[in-house]
Image (cartoon, rainbow, N blue to C red):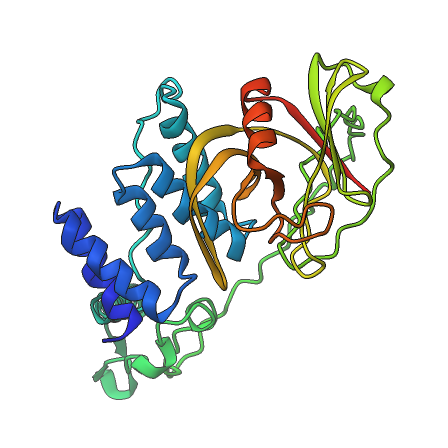
Length: 344
């Protein structure tokens, strides 16, 4: 069965409340297309566990970090994971992704609407011509002559044809003088000077670093310039993480960051959610129960590591790998909102 058909069945089952059937359909989609955004976001929405929802959304963001739907899902999952109420006036339910547009029903309805619009335009055009043409005109010998209707082809219902269609009237025996319209002079409006808008400060957007992009090294942030009570500095060149209280380093850890093809994003971020355990999945790997996870930018996070002990060398798909005991200390020390400064 095609991916499009599986998506249609999954969406229909989800909207009918058949959650198990919907999940099965979307998992079948992922077997054919592992990074299908629609299936990943529906599975995140249908999941009963915030951790599983975040895992699906992380996969969608890994494929397309700038996706508006995945970013909206991320905000929803963050409220679910943090047990935060929805903003005032907004329902605490993530809106389902839109239905698949390539269905046969969609094409049939769209085609019918276009045909109906064309018929309505033809009827309106014929009525307009009927009002413009006289019903009859006297000819030679006193015989009544009826004007020929304008061909429907001359009034085809297209935006270009309608304004240019001019009804034609057969010439009568006696020409009727046509009054010449004297054009009226149109006053030219005086240009009014428009005051230049006052520039407003624009907040600096967070950097967008796809998993395969090569990061641009920024200027390292000196500790003395940070007005934070607690913050985290990650030095990618030396593979060192340092926890600061103000400008005083309180703990230094040797870590493993992203490999050259999957680099760790560079910039200043903030921890947006903390999870005691989380499953992580991506191209070529699946890790269950990763401990002490602190996400700071989409699917990128600081976390404990049980699958290697090669700290001091880049090893990851973009996250910052810490020894598990050190990750536990950092997890208990840092809070949601703690600044994470990453540089070369």
